[in-house]
Amino acid sequence: MIEFHLDGHSKVATYMQLVQQVRQSLRLGLIDPGDQLPRVREVAEALAINPNTVLKAYRQLELEGLVSARPGVGTFVTRSLAGPSLANQAALRHDLIGWLSQARAAGLDQEDIVALVETTLRATFQEGIAEA
Amino acid sequence: MSTVLETTGLGKRYGGTWALRDCTLRLPAGRVAALVGPNGAGKTTLLHLAVGLLRPDAGTVQVLGRTPAADSGLLTRIGFVAQDSPLYPDFTVPDLLKMGQKLNQRWDSEFASARLERLRIPFDRKVGKLSGGQRAQVALALALAKRPEFLLLDEPVASLDPLARREFLQALMGGVADDGTTVLLSSHLVADLERVCDYLIVLQESRVQVLGSVDDLLAEHQVLIGPRRAAAQASPAGVASVIRESHTDKQSTLLVRTNGPILDPAWTTRDLSLEDLVLAYLADPSAGVLPGPSPLGMDLTS
Image 1 (cartoon, helix red, strand yellow):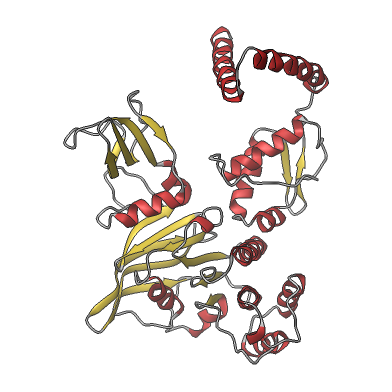
Image 2: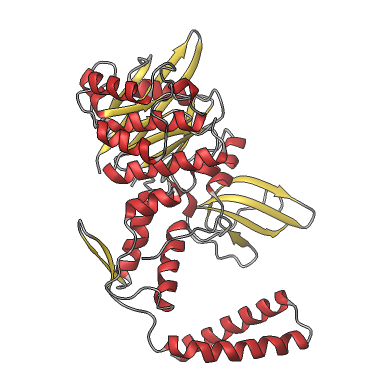
């Protein structure tokens, strides 16, 4: 079972924060198919949020085919996002740490790095879409 | 979807002064609605009209399809907590639960005592000796023990400290999730309610100024930042109305209600919070968002 947290300063809508946390937990392999998500009532009470917001998040995850609701029982994970990428993450993280120290040695501070990564990310993924 | 509260041209006058006037609104079932406005805007008057403590001087009010004040059967189906959670100060929690049992046809004593035990409210102490936060929790538990279809709360969190406020809203959201209760709660603070409410009613100067679903209202309002624009200059395409604008010598900032996407590259758009939206409207009593036959053809109540 996972526990939801909200970022009070985030501009991301509350229901989307819940969706993103489930996706993240699936990617990291923290939850697997068959696992149950916290009940709507429990999430609403723990976070002091409107139960409709939790329902909206769970419906979105259902639309994405990640969970399915069993009426009267609960909402269960049906698909994993961990897949093969999980195994590769350690190696990629290692490379990334190497790259980050190069960037710092080259005089970039944290904001410079974030800006560079964001623009490169956007450009690369846009190319990817254009090619596909 | 069924309607829990519906008013048409509702008005209430004290002497020569209208405390509420031309109030026309509809609250769909299953919503948690915030009733927001400055002190004296008519929030308490509207709540008292809805529960039958006051009778209208103009227009009509219907709750769950019935007329409050004329229909005592309605009282078994609604819960109401007045401002500052008034409770008999010399009663203990068990005294109050017993009173609730005797006075209500529909009453779930176990539900109420289980809630209060979970919150570790002392049962042996007089209610007058409890903290403000504990009293608010007791009043909420008593109101929920009726398992009401419609729960009305007048400024439930205004006098609570931040921790008690959060605990109160947690208890309220848990209670709402249990029964799908429709809630109308008044407040002059909005920040606390942003995640709790999915419906918004703004009252100002005795009138309804903004009404609609929070998601819809947030989706159609944006802040635009761009180069200085002359006051008479036309708004960019997609802007239905400008609620607030400010200018420096180089830059203009507009808070707008949109009727389409803002595609003009000269303008940077930014979403705004519910609090920003409410404050912008409160600062300009002449602006308003009301559903119904609008030139945009949008139905904010759906």
